[in-house]
Image (cartoon, rainbow, N blue to C red; front, side):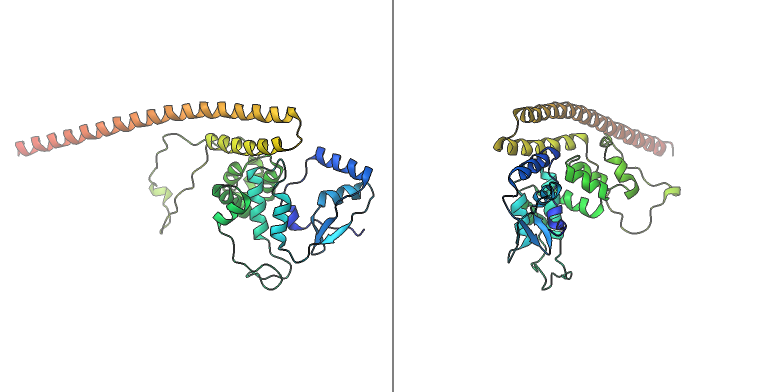
Length: 299
């Protein structure tokens, strides 16, 4: 068989786990490839792991052409129900699939492929079966993140929340931030007016984008783990793996409980300080009025 390449639509989805790929390779070596791989534009759009495993053991693969089917719908249907795919991975893959243009297509679609208008964020979320926020994060990652961050999300090393936060950093700092703990949001942050030596340029100033706290990250990780655990329970997954996932979820829940308690304490402290500040302002205003009254009396 001629050496084939993986189609970009297929490459949008995460690679098979090493253990699963080894099991697939062993099976193909024993009984051959039972299901043909699907080609589109001369590349493998479905069955890349089957093709790779067969090539590794020196066997050929039967092939079929995609035919008159929307390649985006096809690749999503083939991969959406895969086990161990997190919401962040699915959101990232879906945005990549619908950003794809076929060979020869212009920016408006053209006659070479799908010419329907771009999908909205809500439509992409419905297609992927994830939340709108996950799609928004995926779009930010696709447009602003360096390749190392994209690959880290595809591998499942980091979630969409952290990756979207990293994508806001300068490009030269993003790769190093992948393995760093998420930055904490500073409590009681106070806006500082620019001084004379830090003059802002004229014109409208965009609002700063908020950073995500550890609490946000933990909540997203729990959502991803719940999705993975639910899928795992539907398939033949070792009991040890399910137990480990459940234990990790409980650990993260405990962390969220602790972070929530800290947040409540900070909120109480902030409210107390704001109340004190308000009282001090009232006292100062009363003192000014009294000074003004005495001045008028002297005059």
